[in-house]
Length: 104
Image (cartoon, rainbow, N blue to C red):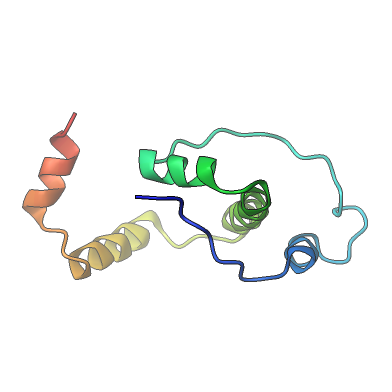
């Protein structure tokens, strides 16, 4: 399978500038650690990424989590409907879904 290299969408200093903005109160602020379960392939790809790639991913995830927790979300049913539609477009069938849900 090999190591997955995550594309750099922004130069290193641009990522931090984009994430923290120009606010001196946010730039360099203390960070807290959280644990988020992910599938084994994602965990392996992250663990095999270089230290610089991991740093960029942490910054991008922090930004995305902040966005998700501070932006009003649509109703849960709307989100579930959209996820279901996208899954069907990508080939997920009810049978495959049941197999995945019942797999140990």
